[in-house]
Length: 174
Ligand SMILES: CC(C)(COP(=O)(O)OP(=O)(O)OC[C@H]1O[C@@H](n2cnc3c(N)ncnc32)[C@H](O)[C@@H]1OP(=O)(O)O)[C@@H](O)C(=O)NCCC(=O)NCCS
Image (cartoon, rainbow, N blue to C red; front, top):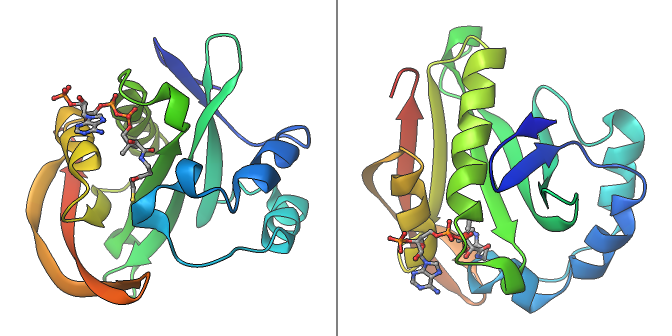
C-alpha cells in the first residue's frame, strides 16, 4: 500500500476486477479524453493473471479512499529514450470516478506515484501527457509538482480527429 492522506494506492486484487470490467466501457468514468473506442475485458484478465497487472515495465494501481473504496485507477509504463537502462522513464495516467472528482484525489495520486517511483527505482524522470483541452488534468499535474514542457502537435488520434497533447514531467528532487 502506498499511503496518502485522502487516498492510498495499491495493486489490483481479484475482487477489484469486477469494478474495472464494469467501467472499461463507461464513457463517464473514462472521460472524453480517453475515448479510444471499445475495450475488451480479456486484456485486463490476461494482464492480471500474468503479474497481477503490477510489473516493473507497466501496470496499474487502484486508487482507494481511507475506507478502501475504489475511487479510481492509475496506469504506468516505461518509455525508452535510449537503449541503456538510465534512459528509461515512467509515463503515468489516471482516472478518478466521476462522483469523486474535484476533491484533490487526482493531485495526491500523481504526487504519490511519482514519489514511489523515485524511491523504488533509480530513475530521473516521470512524465505525463494529456489533451491540450484537459484543464482539470493539467491543473492536477502542476499541483502535483510536474512542470509543463510543451505541446506535441496532433500526437493522438482519438474519436475521429488528431489532437494536440501537452507533455509534463517531474524530475528527481523536484
Ligand atoms: C483529470 C482528473 C484525473 C483530475 O482528478 P481530480 O481528482 O478530479 O482533480 P483534483 O480534485 O485533484 O483537482 C485538480 C485541479 O483540477 C481542477 N478541476 C477539477 N475538475 C475540474 C473541472 N471539471 N474543470 C476545471 N477544473 C477542474 C480542480 O479545481 C483542481 O485545481 P485547483 O486546485 O486549482 O482548483 C479527473 O478529472 C479525471 O479522472 N478525469 C477523467 C479522466 C482523465 O481525463 N484523465 C487524465 C489523463 S488523460
